[in-house]
Amino acid sequence: MLDWLSSTFSGGGMTAFITHPACFGHNMGEGHPEGPERLAAIRDRLITAQLMDFLQEYEAEEVSEVQLARVHPPRYIRFLESVSPNVGTYRVDTDTAMNSGTLTAARYSAGAVVKAVNLVMNGKVPNAFCAIRPPGHHAETEKAMGFCFFNNVAVGAMHAFAEYRLKRIAVIDFDVHHGNGTEEIFKDDERVMLLSSFQHPFFPYCGDRPIGSNPNIVNVPMPSGTRSDAFRDMVTDIWLPRLHEFKPELVFISAGFDAHLEDDMGNFGLVEADYIWVTEQIMKIAEQYCGGKLVSVLEGGYELSSLARSVAAHVKVLANV
Ligand SMILES: [Zn+2]
Image 1 (cartoon, rainbow, N blue to C red):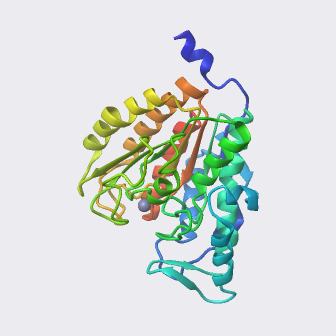
Image 2 (cartoon, rainbow, N blue to C red; image 1 turned 30 degrees about the vertical axis):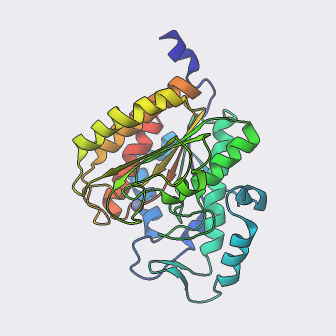
């Protein structure tokens, strides 16, 4: 018990809530489910739930070229710049588009995670939640897809390796979709343990077999219709033992909330109580192995009410309210 106590966060500060107005400038068109109203719904809910009093709000800074280039090669960034439209939209795949504000939003989104890493690693805050868009977990090294352009969590993880000399980072992805981008980026990098549960078969139609040499990629495909019990059993039986073995020095959550029962984007049946529970489990791991150092980053979640309620439930646990 003493070991557990002595390893918990001993600095000051409240859970950081990191966002940027530029994230509202990315718009893929009227009626697109990944719209700026998602962030507005989250903020409204955090205010009405009186949670903002327990959060320290920070404005993200723009990611630097060096920070971005640790994950995405300059030629990919130049390509995105070359197709970035001044007016209208440019489509990178059937459901992912850029408008004039997309690249700036993407730069601040990745920058938010870098800021979160700095705040957490320097002991300014115990943990952080990044309310950002575009999301990131489908973005591969050189491929924008699935509403994602830059892999925000991967940029944060590579920043933590480079600046804080970490050796083991866990990324836990409970979005209903497979974090294929994060897998592709870290497929041969054993310093990263990726735990990704997802509906399968389903977009992006991969994750069912290894694509690289990293034994710490733990993909858990689950059938349509997966509900609370099966999800919690999976976390208990697969994720937690692997995390105890791995002993992470920093924990990221790719926090997608589209596995919610009310979210039509997927066919899982999670509810707020599940997000509370899984957040508690992850926090216990972080407390046991890395002083509670945890950075949670918004991914999916498209039904505005369930998204906002789930984020509030998640953040409430992070903030220990
Ligand atoms: Zn998703």
